[in-house]
Image (cartoon, rainbow, N blue to C red; front, side, top):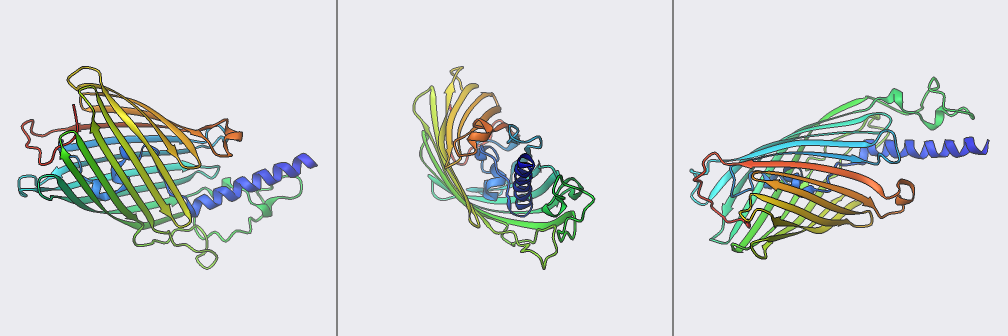
Length: 341
């Protein structure tokens, strides 16, 4: 009987956690810098030395402690437009698709965004950008796969008993609006600094599977802030320190660290990438990667440092990112420099 009570409370805690995730959890990647449009719409077209970019991301989280781990996938792309129309600026147009599946109830989030940004040179050594993104969001859950405290009959969970929960729907849809700004400073060809801020869920959409009279259905605004740097030390090394901070209601996240590119081929065509990051109070994140010509593949791993590490043996999450870039015109005139080999 003692074992049954322990199982009961474990399942209840997991169920409560899953239901909290239904209304409160926002998605994220540890390699936030490889999912630029999801962090800040002002990043759309923010790649001065190329005409277009395409990227995919995949994250698998908590597979060591649950048979239904969080799986987050995204695909994104952007392009520069009207570069010949503006003497010292350009327009960026892009889009992103984000999908996440988690938990016993197959809680599924699907987000589709379109974004636009304008980038304006300020003199010869800085750039100011502003961006807007609008998107459609769908969230759904299979309620029949969930169990609740009212269904505990003293021995086991009986799915035929009423849940006692005020579900109004198993799927919700809404419009989501995001805004952002970036500033870049590049005093020399070997030094590049960039800072940005964005506000997500600006319209505070309603999101809930419950009766609106039972719970608060409003999605809180999320504030993102980052500072990036690139420093070319010599013909072999480029170092890229990064700091990222995000806050949504009472939840916050801070990620800081650096990665470095090592010139393997001497001409910059092939590069080895290595980095180390730390998410405050949660995980140490080593990263390795390889760049060949216009393709960059990076892999990172979240090694849990919080108390959860006792249960998952520090195995938190792994992440994959693939980004490719290109030019429509090989003789393109670069309007602002970037640090590269």
